Length: 111
Image (cartoon, rainbow, N blue to C red; front, side, top):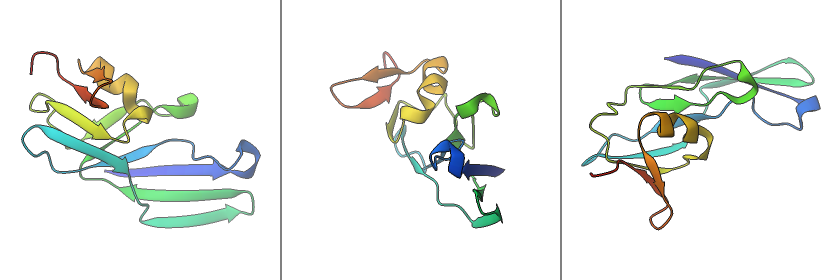
């Protein structure tokens, strides 16, 4: 799936959305990390754009312009999600996972 992202100088140089790449699930554990963009563009001096190609990953709904979602992850088989989970905490909660403060991971109750 192809995703676009941008940042503006007036917004404090923050990316509009968090795009996270997921590792291949191993024994029900998925690790999320910030995705590396395939290409960057500079349409003007105040804006930087980035394009991502994701096979497995998730994105958030920052600034309200994109609904949170994921691609290539079988959430029914996932028991635990680790790594950079803060941007997609709403999505993980909707999927029935709860945050375990002891292990610092999102886990499926009863798994």
